[in-house]
Length: 262
Image (cartoon, rainbow, N blue to C red; front, side):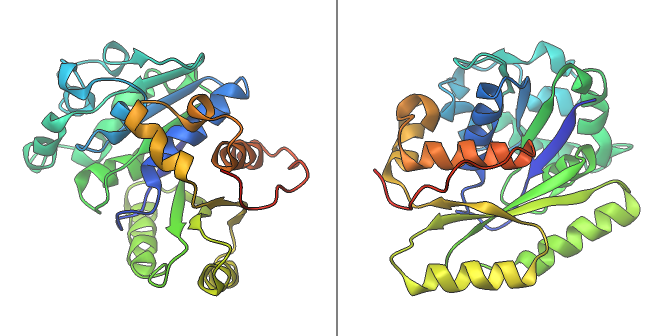
């Protein structure tokens, strides 16, 4: 049975979409079958995999509104074993259109129920908000991966997010767990990064050993419609997402790589 992980943080700029794309690719390269669901109307996950969001006729919007089967909206990618359920701006209207709908929080879970066991992992990229789209992602998931940027206000908003996760667990999805907290955009030259890493590790039980550094190649890759493993497989960013995939798969990490690189 496949595992569904929602990547979630209502705070923007935490590396959520970067993580959704590059973790999915790293897992696919580890020979796992992956479905990546773009639940963000900005559709950066879709375009980051080289798919033109303006050419998409049916998207996650149509699956949520039950106007299309989710299997019929899936698109293949340049990565073997990685399929994507694309998004586009149509999804902006979904929150409003679903407000009065019966079982509106479970639309994604229902849509996925027919195909989730076809994949080893379903990864959901949720929008930077705690609205109905994100709630759908949380209701459909087994666990939540929370990316946290290594910056001064890192923990701001995390309490609210954890409260939301608890409310969803208590009322809508009893099996929901925190998969882990992922530290992103680390600049190991600064004391601030070291302090944030220490603070997060002290405050949360499940923090990944892997820390994603600030990496120019990671920020460049989406503009070429490529994951980092294709754009620059030897970069520190690519290596770190490969390590994160190993952690999630429960595999021992190889010898630690010194922060830095391209």
